[in-house]
Length: 223
Ligand SMILES: [Zn+2]
Image: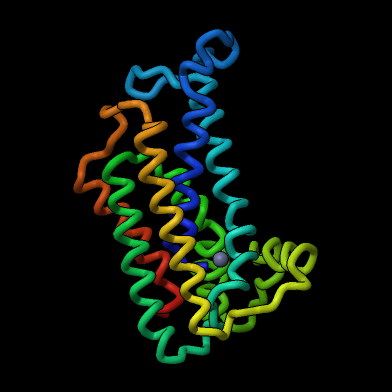
């Protein structure tokens, strides 16, 4: 599916994981409260490392399910760009950028969900494909992470009709995006991330890293 859908799934995962593995949850668990190391005199405890790891791994593998279910959405191949795709692709990309920036500006901890939810695309499209374009004699396709997605479709969704080429099926993804945005709104009120202004980077640093990532994302289209 489009980047915005992956990002929103990653954002929701962060809120759910931070809720279930909160500091209150770690309160009466000696092992979870244990300090592992310190950053700027702030102790980093087992519970924090657990939260980051679970959220990142869940966001990473969420890509398999989200892209797997993309067969029910409009998802033309890269070299096929009919009119609807020429309009929808840039719109989806811009909204993905806006959603990612708003989330990261609000709380940098969303980065675990956002980056790992898109890791498959960053690796396959923006890294392996770019290397293969620069050096056509190399075949790096056996390293594609999207193989997990294809295995998922072949195992669980082999029976399902494929809507990749059906422009109207974009409505399915728009509805999924709307549901995820509403879920984010509800969760942010119900299970807000605990206040921690110290770890929020300065705006100029956030903008700089954001632009670097955006360029990395766009690298296969640029080259
Ligand atoms: Zn993907």
